[in-house]
Image (cartoon, rainbow, N blue to C red; front, side, top):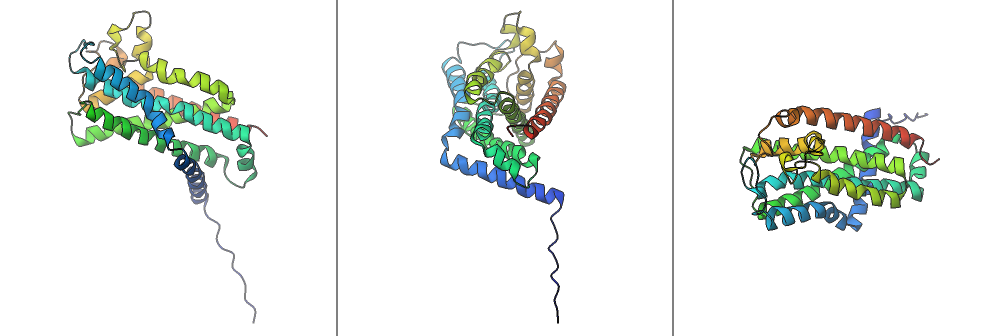
Length: 275
């Protein structure tokens, strides 16, 4: 009597991709367990901004539309968490390129998409942990939402989306620049300059007229304006410009375009990265 061996069914494409992404994400999170200070690094710049501006100087800065400056500045600190994720992600991907890890991944029978998606999911978690720290600090400094639970959660969900898009921007930086030293010099400007060219800490009408349009159309300003509306915090301006009156349109268009550009170009560059 002979028995035949029935081969095990191969997993579907989606199931296989999910398994591969989970494996890469787990690898990145294990690295985080050995270097937990990375979470603090993501939260450090927003914390400094909130403490220095939102607490120490809260009585020195007046908002044109009125309201407590400490509550005004929190949305800017939350958005700065997303910007702070660009550098660490870029450095991690660049180190994989330089250290040969990319070559090892390319030699494995896994999807090329799984590696980058796993990177971004893991770094999204890092950004969310940093957001938890910043939110706790904000509550201690006096920030309070004044809307319902769904609106409050909607604001944090928007920040999470912004974090994810910024993580992909970090991936694109890494695959374009590739040099860790260059990335370390350039990416701090994203965290420091972009918030001050937005409504994060100052109302646009208080910014010099030469760069005021930049602050008004900055996608960071649109994200922050939407969060302030969802949380019921003081607004940056009474309106009068398209970005101020329609921040959701600016958010959808800018973040959607940026995500599509960063992800598609990153996948293409990764396929042709270091042979």
